[in-house]
Image 1 (cartoon, one colour):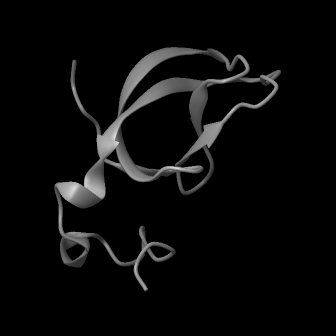
Image 2: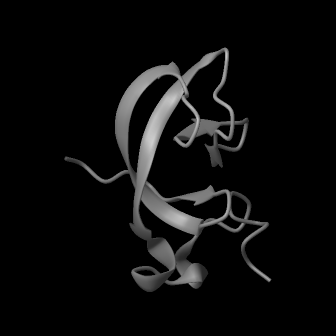
Length: 78
């Protein structure tokens, strides 16, 4: 399984992820959404199809924030 570029996950922070499926999210699953892609936790499920993902591990432990694109990760860098 291929790891993809890390994204910000709701409640987890910056994480790598694994794609699972493309369908409406069920309660308790993470999905990708947004103009600036972010991982969201589906508390009650969704009515629209989205990329279902599983966060695999925190990116902050494996990469330096200085190497990130400052525009894409603007809300991470302080």
